[in-house]
Amino acid sequence: MQFSEETLLATYPFKSSNPFLVDVGAHQGTVSTLFAKKGWQVLAFEPEAKNRAVFEQKLKRFEQVTCIPKAVSNIGGEKVPFYVSNEHYGIHSLKPWHDTHQLAYEVDTVRLDDALAEQQISSVTLLKIDIEGADFFALKGFDFQNYFPELVMTEFMDERTQPNFSYTHHDVALYMKERGYTTFISEWQAIKEYGREGVKTDPHVWIQCLPYPLDHQPAWGNLIFVPDGEQEKFQVTLDTYLKELRQLQKAQKITQLRQNIKNIPGVQRLYNFIKGR
View 1 (cartoon, helix red, strand yellow):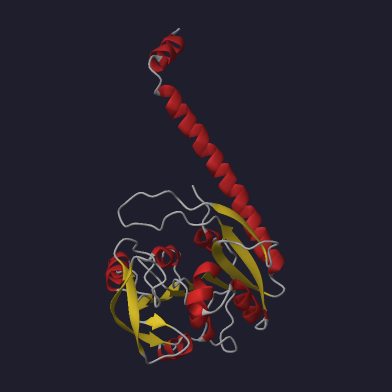
View 2 (cartoon, helix red, strand yellow; view 1 turned 180 degrees about the vertical axis):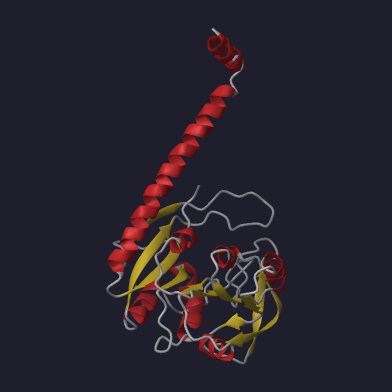
């Protein structure tokens, strides 16, 4: 079992009695499904047609889930180029930052505050943004005066965003600090290969989750924003999750070791002989 920010957030003791997730860059619905199963209402955004079709099929039984086929940005009502990778199904983007990107079609843009107003949504519990570099633009279109989520999470990778979108994770952390949030950095090792649909690839390697700033330049990961004053609550949730994760990983190793021993020629016969004595 690997570390997962989504699973970590799902264990957080949210206060809301009517929790609401805004899932920007919903892909094939992994995050939306996790929270929909917990009874949350979900407003998702996924402009890429193939991934959205999978999302809609996967979540069709959840009446409280809505998926909007638009790209979220800080400017709404535009048609902008959309770039798709035919090799890696999780890196479609508004900018061609990967050598496999190809111009696919144009997509409509929408601001989060406009979409929330149109859907008549009064509160947001968790805001998750993962849109392959354009995350900060989506964040700038969110009204933090009317909505103040209990947690916010966005992806970051300065190597991608600085040359293509003109910002770094420091800019995002400062922006959120001005809006009353403390930043935690969930850091991962540099990506060796992006995911391929239906093809097993080496999993990404998680390093740590610490308060911003780190004492070095992180390769990539997720920024988790916690309202000022709630840092200890988040830290306790993180520590508990990591402890349980280590216990599960230890149990899995023991199970695998036992299975490997059983697969050694002659071991099962020896075990049966000893057991029958």
